[in-house]
Image (cartoon, rainbow, N blue to C red):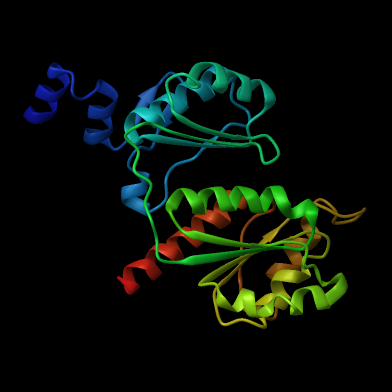
Length: 252
């Protein structure tokens, strides 16, 4: 405690950093930020921007940078993008903004990117699944895992799946995103001996077209796979990160 107080008094530690050390989280006007989640769970807290004001998103991103040297943001709107660019563009040297996937990743000069000896394959059924898969890839690359992306291998033309089978089998973990009836993760899980995480995507026509049919199909899979919620790319990426960390630990 004394060392923390002396560090704050000496200017080498900010009050927010000290609060993060003591409580594990920081309280601000925009809410609490879980600065200790990565140490506790192996995955960082991401800032879910949807439903928050641009000012709240900027404040949380600044807190994340101050306490963990990086900020991950998902479901970012255009006004929030603009606010982040304005407020963080000059102070943060590495700002990656992806409007297609509605994500932002910001790191401070002190951030040291980790490296994991593990490869996560990400497969998509079609182009519409791309943004959800990209969200998962952002989490994995931030964690230092290698990502092998295989796109447009949906089961409407099964040859597209089978001609990528050797590549899929080389991955340590697989994330498979698919909309419509969500068959691709089930098919892939029956052909590989690695963990498969299925991600239902909100696409398709009419009844079940908002991802419900894909979710139900994956939950009812007769092959063994894990399933996350509809469009939950971040959750899939975080779960695969835990696998990758365990694999890296075992190999090292």
